[in-house]
Length: 233
Image (cartoon, rainbow, N blue to C red; front, side, top):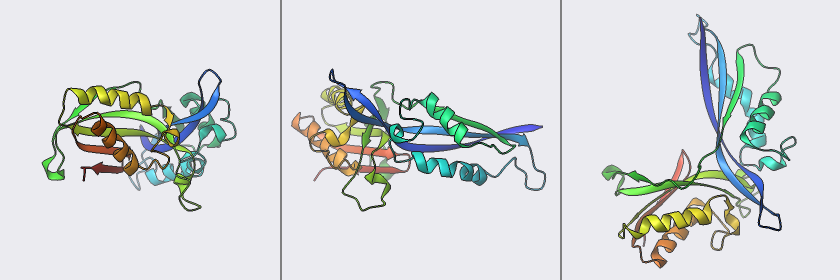
């Protein structure tokens, strides 16, 4: 009896894009989902096909090339860093495969457009009813010390949450924010030259404030494990 298991890894990476009629080079970025697939018989001595840690360890040397880097600068991905090309590149880099390995699957990054979603209140976290949308962008934090991974150009699929007193204007303003931020190199936007999650939250708050939408909360989530909220002064 063969069993298939999957270890999911996420990387935060940028890629180069051409913008404008003059073909000027810039960046965008995303969180990429990568599934590592193994298959085989259950080892009766331990009860699994392979240790998930072994799957993670197999991918680790390749992950260092990709995570918090610009894919377009990686040898072999310079001209095509699409999810399909990235999947082929990773599979080749991992060869020779262990007998139980079946390859990787790279899933197209989100988002595919502006989609506003409702989030219920979370009293235990002091969070009111709010809305959220995803946007994808690149950034770098060159002011950080040498060796910090965020110094490099990389990307995220951000989750932006907001609550405003003007519940009619806020969704319209949110879509304008999506159009300003999605697919951009955030460092090139005025006020986001140091585009930490904290500074993005403040920047968005001021956007709502200037439009008299009455912001109550702005939240920015860079990765599944990292999130910040701003409630105002």
